[in-house]
Amino acid sequence: MMDVHAPLSLVFMLCSLFTEGLSNSCIGRCGQGVNTAYNCQCNSACVRYNDCCSDYDALCLGGQTTVDALSAVMQDLWNSDTNRLRDSDYTISTTGSRLFTYVNQTALNKPTFQGLIRLLDNYNIVVGQTEQPTTSELAEVDDFMNTILATPVMAKTFTFLANNGHITNSNSVFRNTLMELWFNLYPRSSTGPTDSSGFEHVMVGELKGTSTVSGFHSWIQFYLEEKNGNLLYESFIIRKEPNMIATAISWHGIKKTKASFFLGTSPEFDMAVYTICSLVHRDSLCKFTLQNQAVSIQTWDIAHKSGYQIGSAYPSI
Image 1 (cartoon, rainbow, N blue to C red):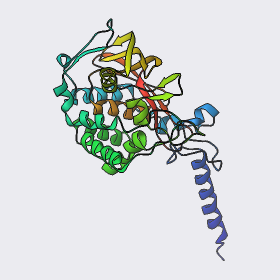
Image 2: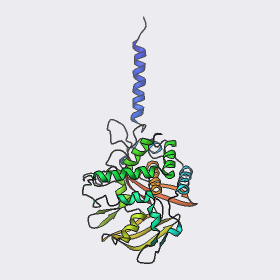
Image 3: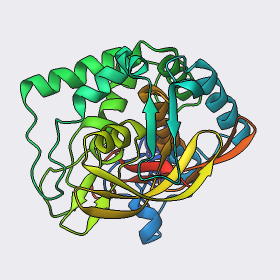
Image 4: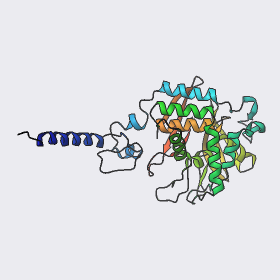
């Protein structure tokens, strides 16, 4: 008589081995919160707690994306950034009392610039105070997303991320990924209220109490706040090609010793670069070559929230 238990035992053994294998892998788990049912973890906090799965870097940090591949896509984005201001569209003075001495206002009338500018006053910049977006403010985010997603820069960003396995090949998934990275709200502190987002931190800037300016990595916000008298240019630190600068500032009377950002670039370019770097090299330096110059972008995740969000992203110069 045939022993049916042997084949069944073999099946159970194979299933057990397969499940055990997954418990030691980041396959399908990148960005998930801590799960003690697994032997190792696959979120940014695992680096701190030294419990990352062995394939965390390759699967979740883009370890298989080479510097050459990053350099190629970043150069492609730069070449495609038709909304970037020309050198003649703005003038800066690193030795004067104001950084921006001239900006061509017509250049700022382009749809993606106007879309970003409409978002800048939608946020409570004080960390620790709950964000409560209105219906009209959420509609402005939706309009801005529609505008930037229609640009060649974002189309190339989608293609790169999909082709390299960082997102599935779906326009809706790409949009949702951008929303989660940039606009979905989160608590900046693990015990605080829902008071922040990637966009607010990077593109608008935040105030921590009465002593610290946090974020503030957009040249557009710098120019507008300087123009409106809310920001004082304190001193020049360094300028690096292509189109990067770091300065000391005072914003609403609070100092930041170093604020770095691209100069003259479009909103979609900045967000594309920071998006790619956040997905490929999370919580680390994202290094590539652009315009024959070495560039490093520092990215940070919000470790206490499950999934991927931009805690911060900026040129490291």
